[in-house]
Length: 377
Image (tube, rainbow, N blue to C red):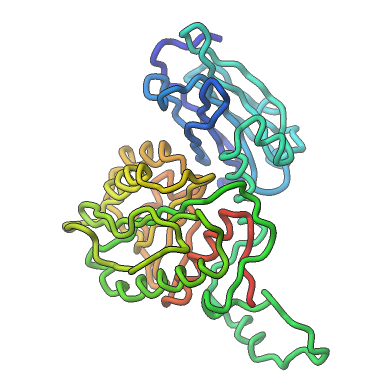
């Protein structure tokens, strides 16, 4: 069916339990190459007048990290303001696969059209062919995270395991206990991405986070040492600081070649706690990346007390193309003002107590991006 010129096509996902399924929008050029990938648990906005340059097709899909969409009873997807409502089988309720193609907006003779699709995808080859490697990688990383997600903070049960006597058979025990630090960790499993990955980090330097400056620096140093031992050439990290404004901390660099680590930005960040300037600066820094990454994720190190306008920040976050978002907060943080933001609902929340735990979170995030996992060595 035809779409009006400059139309804004909202895609809304209605599900009985939040966090089960995710909407995925893939913006492709005429050759099928991916220009951007958007994800959200509730709503995507396809603005035909503001698409990435060269877009000729926008593929819309729903996916779950594990199992199948058929396990999501009551799943319903509304595409466009009264355009079409996909429910039941059309929305993936009968799809035994984890990913379901909902439909696509496509350009034909300089006019935009919408077409309902309605079939499932399973396997990396099918996902890559239909959605492109970036979206396929997003799903694979979500699956890996879902199957083995654990914040590296020992609890009482773990402490009891640590105190248990050694295995009388003398068998090596790897990965059963939480690692003390990245120094005692290694990456295991097959690397499931075909190229380098990029982690973009936004570091909160507002007054309430000043006490963690030394801790953050130590964690980043441990990441550099870990990367030299465990990570591949080409994997990238970039970092900016933010408060009322944003400034560069670490320009895009291969993680294995991290040089002097600093918590002092290349400019003033003012006062306040605004994430938007940091996101805009991180996106701008992508032009300085030495290699083009296969996938990109965001880590925000903060106490979660942001003062951004959600109506401004959420659309910006949607357009960044992050496969995963990680909010990393001190263990003592209680007031997370981001709960009303859509990007927060799809973010993985981590808590840290010291530099070793923050370093382990860095390592775990990189392992998730490559489809691997951390294990004691």
